[in-house]
Image (cartoon, rainbow, N blue to C red; front, side, top):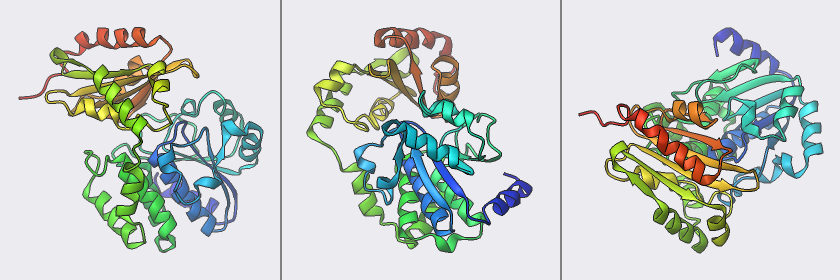
Length: 341
């Protein structure tokens, strides 16, 4: 966002507004961390604010300050529509295209006419926002919200609740600070959040130490289903709806499973295919190392997108047909799926 646009937005925010903060379907730690961090900040600056989420979050995020005040659109569509239609200002966080909201919420966002503000770190955003704060090199949307508050000159308003939310988003989207987008600037932001009251040990435990017996059994099934294609330095995992049901799948249980495939020696491209019979789709998560762009791969083949090394997608084909499509594409990528010497 250039300085002229930023000053215009600052002027918009100078008087109390009815504000909605919207994040993407199947929210993760960065989606809720950034949204709730911004929520508490805007409340402190005098705005009437509601966070609207297309659907509910995984259990491991239920502790976040303010999570219980989030409006779940699919649980009460009419109330969600009322909030969005009344909003003068809508912040869209951690996504850059309305289709990421799902079929219930997407048409509502297309019909309302608020001032839109996009804060996001994914590639190739759609052109719907009046104000765009977009940087695909950033570690997370939560880090960008911190920078947004800092740029407003109101960093002193960051308290323990805001710090805890933003720290959660950064922690989860950086893979606990191990992904390449984690920079020295990221660590400086994190240091400031710790100084503001975020308890790193407690937050880490709440995010990661939440395994259930069923989740561990599901992980075992996922690893048993893993296929490694040595020729293409690729590995993939499948989970059918029957397998999910067998282990009493809860939202968030498969978080991080795809990284096990990527951790195998000589694998540079990993995927997980998860059957969702309720939505009648196959959910796809893609990961890579090096310069191979799973964002471009997903956009081209699986109706998705994301980052160079982490992206998501979907397929309307069956699980077996989706996997066959994936495997059939790989020979055309032989040159790209090669480790440089």
